[in-house]
Length: 93
Image 1: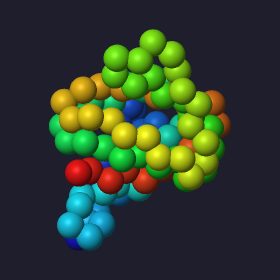
Image 2 (image 1 turned 90 degrees about the vertical axis):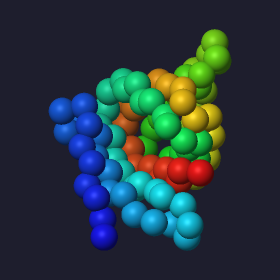
Image 3 (image 1 turned 60 degrees about the vertical axis):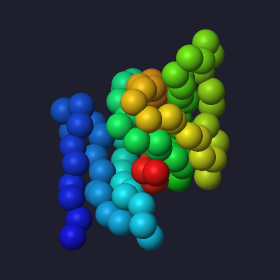
Image 4 (image 1 turned 90 degrees about the horizontal axis):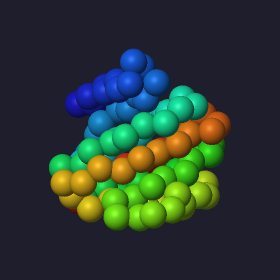
């Protein structure tokens, strides 16, 4: 029913589930910097906390506001800085 994922020595944790026809995860991130790889298009929404991202081919970091969604293309990687514990929803397309 649900799969529990843990990354970066437990600093990022998520629960995977189905959202309609799409796969999704809801999770939390501790303060830190992380690099994530994608295998499908990801729609990530910040639910709480503080996050900046550096998307593929971007030269600058982007501040993500609570309830803001950003999209990452498949088969790329992106950088995330968490300055305040954060929660997120990620839907995979």
